[in-house]
Structures are given as structure tokens and as C-alpha cells.
Image 1 (cartoon, one colour):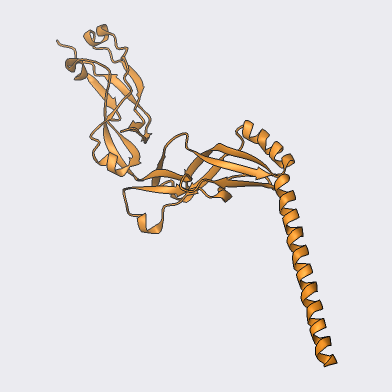
Image 2 (cartoon, rainbow, N blue to C red):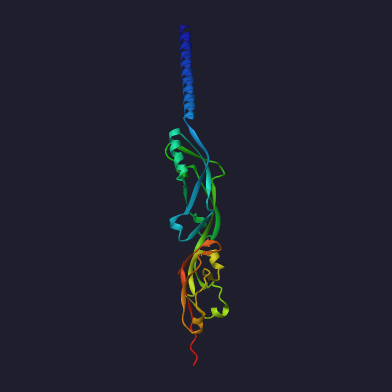
Length: 244
């Protein structure tokens, strides 16, 4: 009988001690959370610029078209000291999310496709002690990817000259090598020059004097940048043979 009483007493003391420890731990945790929250400052709803670039190993084969001035909305939290230091970086636009995009293996053969670049919290550069939080669904950047190729395209002079005068004009070289989106190159029949008022003297044509000037070829097709080689062509007048 005494043994049962002792056993029950020990069991009660053990449960009582465990309960006390659990309550103490819970109170300590609540105190820590309360203190942590009091020591946290928040910068809410800040727009951060996003720069998306193509993988350097794929730049010779693809071109990335990204909407300019892309930004994501981010909230930041941290200790008052860290937040104040980070606030100065935000004021000087030093916080920029830089993402490197790579074309996946299954899309390497496509000429053009659209995709979304997903920005994660780890892509936001923050100092130690500051945490970034993104809004779900507002962290995607749309991009368009073009496969790049090369094509030799005839040059077209844009100068406002009349047709009869153009017959006495020679373009050297007559064609240029253009590197750009394949789908655009395939439907391009000629590469125009920048509009240039050719300073050829009418007396030069009349007196059969050779005149020349260099003009630049446009480096854009359908709103997309292209590389042109050579970038400039020589426009030369053709002297007529003297009549005897």
C-alpha cells in the first residue's frame, strides 16, 4: 500500500515538473517572439529593378527580348540598424535583381518562343540581417527568345534621289552580312541605309566627275536590333564616258 502511494506521488511530481518546464518554455518562446517583433522594422512595397540577361554561352545563337524598365515589388524586414543602412542603398538605386536566363535543351531548335523568368527572394540582393519578401504571382518577367542567324542582304539607298539619278549610283559593297532573328531575316529583302541627303553636285554628273560618300546601314529590323557587317557602305557616282 505504501508502495502504491509512493509511486503515485512520484508520478505526480514528474508530471508536475514536466508541466512546469513546458509552461516555462512556452512563456520564454512568447517573450522571444514578442521581443523579436519589437526589434523588427519593415520597408513595405518597394519597386526593385530587374535586369535579365542571356547566358553568355548562348549569346551567339539566341537573342533575348525583355520589356524595358521591368520591376518587382518587394518588402524588406530586419533590425532597425540594418534597415536604416539598407534604406540608403535603396535611395541610391543600388538594389538591382540580376537574372541570367538560359534556353532549355528542349527549346534549342525553336526560332521564336515566349517564356517567363521567375524572380525568387534569393535573387534580391540584401545584406545579412535583412530579409526580402516577394508578392506571389507578381514575380514573373515575360521574355521573348529569338534564334539568331546570318544572311547576306542587298543594300537599299534611302536618300530621296530620283530614279534617273539612282541609275548613276553605285553601292559598294552591294550586299551586307546581317546577323539577327532568323524569322525576321527570312522575310527581309533589302537593308536600307539611314536617310542621307547625298551631297553630290549636279555639275559632277554633268561633267562626269566621280563623287563618293560613306553612309551607315540601319541596325534594326522590325524593331529588333541586328548586327551589320560592314556597318557603312560607299555610295559612288558613275561617270559617263565622254562623247566624241
